[in-house]
Amino acid sequence: MKAGVVHAREDIRYEDIEKPVPGAGQVLINVKYTGICGSDVPRVNGDACHFFPNVLGHEFSGTIEETGEGVSSLKKGDRVAGVPLVPCMKCENCQKGDYSLCKHYSFIGSREFGSFAEYIVVPEKNAVKFDEEVSFEQGAFFEPTTVALHGLQRLNYQGGGQVAILGGGTIGLLTMQWANIFGAKNCVVFDISPERLELAKRLGATAVINTLESDFIKQAMDITAGQGFDYVYETAGNTATMKMAFELAANKAGICFIGTPTKELSFSVEEWENMNRKEFTLTGSWMSYSAPFPGPEWELAAYYYKTGQLQFDDSLIYKKIPLSQIAEAFEMFKTPGAVKGKILIDSE
Image (cartoon, rainbow, N blue to C red; front, side, top):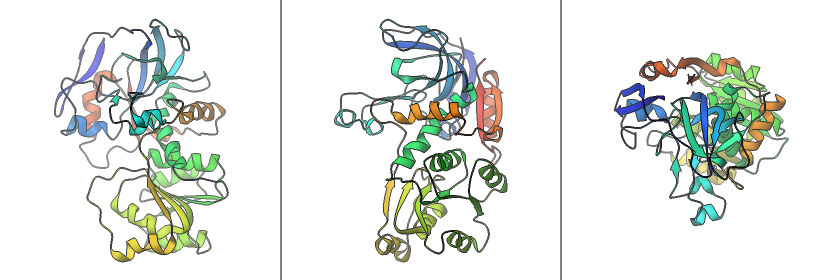
């Protein structure tokens, strides 16, 4: 079969490799689409790849091609989304259902071969079935969609509150939609890109705020009658938005950092004191799994895409690129700001 194989830094090649065969408890998936995740970029363009040669790709959809011995929940032709985490199921964290915190996990598309290929073999539980009403493009968005829902639920989220989403990227816009599905009174998206803010409005944001405007804090506080936001979700991993979260939070608010920081972060005493004076709760979020594995996050993604309550705008996809041109796709990321949305790799 054909695959996009990483051989070294900045060296990903479209070439032939052996087609995998499903063993007991495994399924073979004919891959349709795979999204390029932000974490894939340093594995190709930087030094983050675990080993060479490697096949990346973990945000994928496809159809069941073949099932191994003992597989009972899936059959040939089923439409599925890939679940990339392979927890050990034996450690204390796994026994508690905290699969994202497993210390002995494998991960499809980084620690073992992934979906930048025509076919992939995964354990039965790592393929989530979805109905015909859900497109394969949406199926390739299940992984970031579940990351957003897991982050939302890391706080004791209740309907009727004021919600701030810091960052209008893919995760931010999906978190915004989940917040609305579960009853936000107002859901406000903050970003510096007019295009992303316009997309946020189309997808259901109550209001959008450009943080390049000098009075953006006043605009935000006016929406909440000066009280601040009950729930603040930081999705950009940016120093400015992480500090902004502390300022926008209401008294007794919940703040969740979903975004992954890439730089050292420090707070002034005045900034940090917000936590004491407001008595807000601060937590983080990691991946998208809960019990029973892979978790309700994945079932709900399939359900709400089917009903249409999770809206899917074509603007979420920047480009669809054939697997044969995967090297060109990663070249695009070398120009800062050039990629405006998700790139999907088409394996067919």
